[in-house]
Image (cartoon, rainbow, N blue to C red):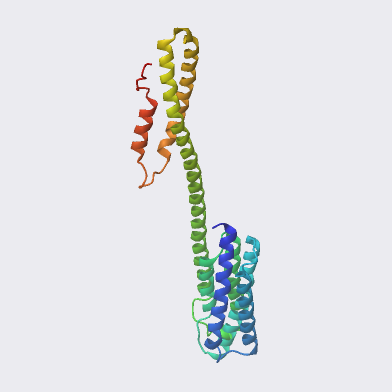
Length: 280
């Protein structure tokens, strides 16, 4: 799959997770949610659902940049929702662990991000950056009730997410290199098969011409000059056979077909002019 196809698949996964995750957050935070949070949840479900339906349409073809833009677009309602969820939890709980949705989202984005660094980094920094900004906008009375370790906890999650993203992108690079090497191998093997076919087709005519040349040389001395020319032409054909011979080892032979050793032996027998011509 090319980068455009992988970006399209990443956008589909992002939209699907947007629908499922936001739908789960509705009953999960219903008790503490207000009109603003519920409105953002509804917008998130509608936007992610529309993008998912649009991406799954078989009549539309998306470029890599379009898929990456849709990947980031469905994240925006979730970023706002995580902000409002933490604000609601701060208002309804004495002590709580903040930024949990941000941490989960950052690690998830590192796994499902499309090829390339830019889109994944933007998505991770959206969730990590808004959490850090939110932390420093809390009043002192609220900040004292936050569990210890923040904002270093969310920053650590962001660093880990970037490391995971780096491993993912490294894997994408290695896979692309392996696919390129495989394509080159397949192309070379096709050329090798053509070369072997040419070699096989040339062997029998060379053998026949050599036998005819020997017969003419022995029975009609007047044609010595012509037979010498035929000999030089046959030497060129033998050199062509030698040039095509190295391609033999580049072909992967099927189990149900002749083995490489059998074909090599057949070629050697065909190229050796050992058959006696019956005299008239």
